Picture 1 (cartoon, rainbow, N blue to C red):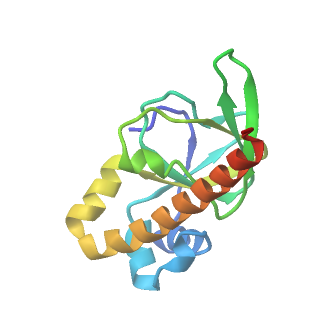
Picture 2: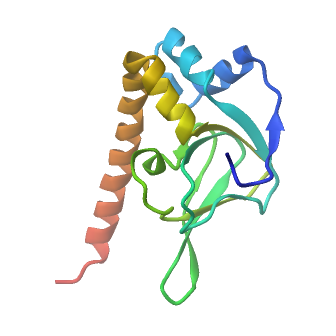
Length: 163
């Protein structure tokens, strides 16, 4: 169960599906698969300053921003917070948490009024148990999103490395 006091949006199945289909992940799926996956999601709203997740948390859920913006924040060893990115409508965060049992690698905080779709770990596992084929259709764009960010990060790191 989610540990934050987010406000749950009471969206119909059709509204959840429409919002999911408008996202980076949902756009890559056929409509029946997107509708099936959306049935495992919930929608929430946050106000500016509210956290989506905290660096170091053991929570496991995927969030996909449907409205608004959020900053991604890393805290260094000295406790300094650095904004390392900003995401807006359609973009996922927290995909890694669905695949590993490691603590969150960054925090995310709403910078505007925000609405997001959430897929909890338990729902991700139920999706796998109930329809492995559709689960696989979801995993492919999630991995694509992760590898895109990995490539961006490695390019940025290469720019700052000194030999």
